[in-house]
Length: 216
Ligand code: DX5
Ligand code: ZN
Image (spheres, rainbow, N blue to C red):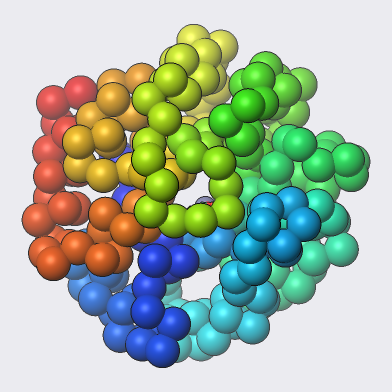
């Protein structure tokens, strides 16, 4: 079953609660929460305080936290205690990836590893036994609303061909059209910012994505 995870980076910050209710009522499977530190990516976004507020306001909502940070190790506890269900770090960081993935799981969260567009997907290979999910970026991380990079699809195929049975996520420029290529290449978790959160009819977007799965 495909998971559809709206990225709340695309939400109106002043109306965060309403925007979350809208996408969840439309049938989303959880929320994708982008954390940016202004070093790993040239932008700043949210903190554990938002994850905590969502956990309080929407206790049953699955929170998939994407850490675009140079030094995530020191923040795993904070995000886990705030209420993250899954925490993804990046393969490009210089900290000890194995240790952080183990720590994420030790906190009872799903552990994920992500690759930026210019990073070879084989960078995740030795960590796959420690990963519940792998996130393939289909834009340069940092901003919503960018153009989908179709040439990332072989990374998804490589993961499945190498027997990875966990979640395969795509993030960046995913919409009903580009999702088709992602699902046929092996993705089962679609992160959608602009195309879903800003959609006039989020129910129709989600329905169209579910239909892709039936056809895959
Ligand atoms: C980009 C973030 C994405 C972003 C996706 O750095 O990781 O999650 O919000 O937004 P769209 O779907 O608009 O590309
Ligand atoms: Zn993201």
